[in-house]
Length: 153
Image 1 (tube, rainbow, N blue to C red):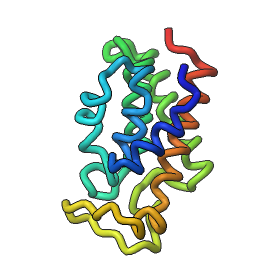
Image 2: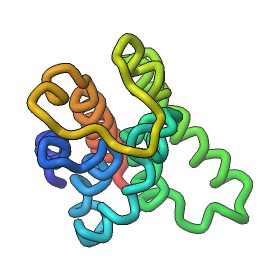
Image 3: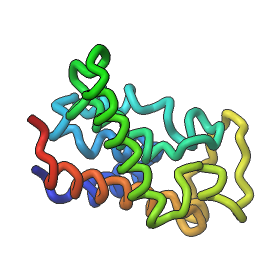
């Protein structure tokens, strides 16, 4: 497995991908999904789902990747579904341990952010004040650790 997923995710964010795209696409080598398709699949989850500031896009990306790697066939098996939801809650809790919340608006508390559909311009100032790259790194590191400790079957 690529041990540089966090670096790749941060690079993708710096290149203009949203938070969800950055994490989801960084793991293309693991998911087997083409990077361009990965960007399209995860494009709606940035900025807390379409800039609604709900669940952080990095967490949404972690959950989608976990579903691809571990969630096959669980929809009719109660025990497997329970195990999978437990996995998702674990990943969320690991993120919360570092950042206190998985909610975008709370992660960005104190910054002047809106929920309008128009994304902010990626300027030098944006990258200086926006903490999102830290969330990108955290999510990728958590997922790398989880995958290495729990190899998909």
